[in-house]
Length: 95
Image (cartoon, rainbow, N blue to C red; front, top):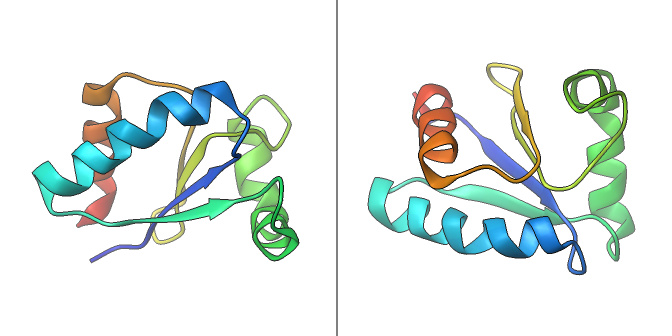
């Protein structure tokens, strides 16, 4: 199974709205996303920065939260999205 990652921040309102959708996705689809809080955890922030060349161009030229990333496919999805879009992204990249 491919690695699915979510970079998020505790105070980010968009992240707060996405986390319940991620939980729902994990339960309904049997998938697991690695969650990395990047505003208060420097190690996680460094990990996100290590993917800057892939993430930033897909996110308007900046590193933003929330960002969803599959290192295996290189697919990036940025920002707050609805559940169906999140599920479609995860299904596409989980195989």
